[in-house]
Image (cartoon, rainbow, N blue to C red; front, top):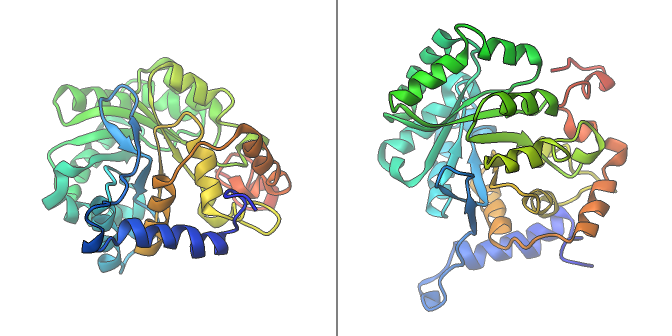
Length: 325
């Protein structure tokens, strides 16, 4: 059995927990051998070096009644070196930004902070930005992103008169935001158009081992973003658990390593609890590039359920009789 063939149960037992015990809970007696730092990469042309694992503002962080758990996750992430936190105005109707803001009140200088506007208009986006600043308890956003670009109609709105790009330009000119990003997970083509028509600094795109089999983001969008010097953030890595199944992908290590072997800056993942966070950071800390032939084998394991593992892409839900994006 190779290191990449451990299933999720085995990895948690002998990989992540073991690594976490050694690296994340070091005792005073280990002072001569301090924990290994999580590797980092350039976040495109922003000048920020981002750790391989970044914290997403969904999962526990966007749910009501999870204050203590959420604050513990955020603080632990920063303690372990995470220096990029991503959230959005839409996550939990402001819950995610509120929890993150409570920590930012005292630890703002330790992270690159990203949030998003889902409004397509100038005025609506500026209102959301004002709300984001208040909830996040900060006077600036490192990267403000246009959220979930799915269709050409989205781009027509944001680039049109009175569109969200006008808000982006104004906020950047006023120094309220430092960089501008675009996000999407439904279809690569609108994102290709978006980064071709505006000089975005970063892109947040969906990537996991099932990507090559249905509306692939890695085929054209990823190389284009790299050619433009953009910071690339991978999301939907475990597809909210739908990537994992017997006979398919069975470990988070496989999923994360597959994505991190791609030319991305970092991955963002929302965590259910501190233990899950520590497991993901341990995987990122131990990261070694996956051989291309092994990446292909892993991807092949998802052929029969590629749409289910990419439920967020256009048409994937319709195939299951669910409402589509």
